Amino acid sequence: MRTFEYGGIRFSHWTENRFRLDGGAMFGVVPRVLWERVYPPDDKNRIALSTNLLIAQAPAFTALVDTGIGNKISDKNRSIYALEGPGMPAGFPLPLDAVDIVVLTHLHFDHCGGSTVEAEPGSKTYLPTFPNARYFVQRTEYEDATDPTERSRASYWEENFVPLHDQNRLTLLEGDGTIYPGIRVIVTGGHTRGHQIVLFDTREGPVAFMADFIPTTRHIPIPYIMAYDLYPVDSLKARKRLYPVMAQERWLLVFEHDDEPKQGFLEQESDDRFRFVPF
Ligand SMILES: [Zn+2]
Image 1 (cartoon, rainbow, N blue to C red):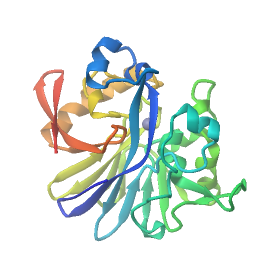
Image 2 (tube, rainbow, N blue to C red; image 1 turned 30 degrees about the vertical axis):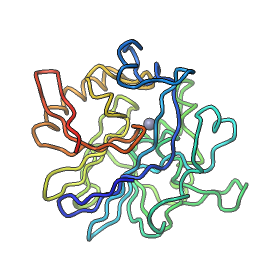
Image 3 (cartoon, rainbow, N blue to C red; image 1 turned 90 degrees about the horizontal axis):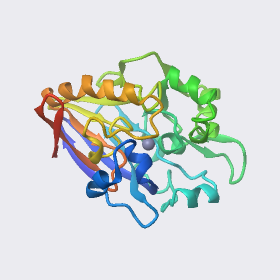
């Protein structure tokens, strides 16, 4: 975990779990001879990733962005994804009832699996992990997650989000906007139709959680888009629109899936080239 103060808000970038995915799938059309230099794979062609979540503690709120993989995962999936940890809520660095706001960037299991827990071990009844929190996600994301296609179905596990909706704990957002004073969302689409990034406005400028828009610091080059993205051309267009703004307004970017928690800025080198500057 890395903890830092920035513009009057205390941030904790906390590793919920570690897992592995196929390196080729993570880099899409980029050939291995290019990506293996920046992200060396293991002997099964997999790269080491983590779920690095963001906690923001301000005078008016305690917010969490994404909830990781959680602890409801089957042994089969544990071994497919080479999970290392027990998952949320184990090790969460605050009391669970201290969290007021949970923003979900989208509803894939590695982003919202920690949102619910079993009411009793082995039961099929699920409760919100954070008893006092309101959860937020885009309406389009909820619609797609509850009506998945053959291609998206494997990542949408309804026990992670339907109980939140049924128990009236989930607010469905309609596009970009402020969800609470100082907390904004921007829909990027691309990875999924309703994928959003989350911004905290601080006195020093925005701190922005990238989720799967830029999953790791090694995905910053504009064409380095995951094969998992359902709408990769939309990802590309969103990058071309947002990267210059991120660089000019000096957003502090927080990345979710590097093997260790990473934060930093984008510096524009030319029209379509951006450099990572660690924080
Ligand atoms: Zn992800």
